[in-house]
Length: 144
Image: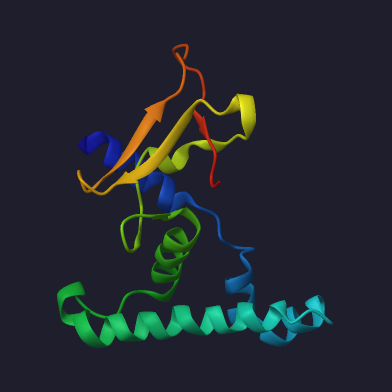
């Protein structure tokens, strides 16, 4: 299990968010707004960029000593974007689910597995719908 977590952490650290709209909005709000006019979507991206910054400041203020200081902006932004883009809904919140979140999306006949939160077990359960060949990619639907 430790090796699975280590591999998963490598995936998260290697995630490329350079062009994510929240990062772009944090770096150049006016440019994002101009690029998306007349859509109001830029306002959402700018608000979310502010939210990431405010959350980082709140974490630093409430548990900075436990962390050994304020979290580095780039590392915190990467962690937050991983939660926003890779997290799945559990009983009442989102969480990262190693291995499962590496499945690619398929709709219809290509879908070989499904996942759901099991309230009784308090665990994410992944089930295969058919036999899979060794090395075959596992695919699931991201939503209904």
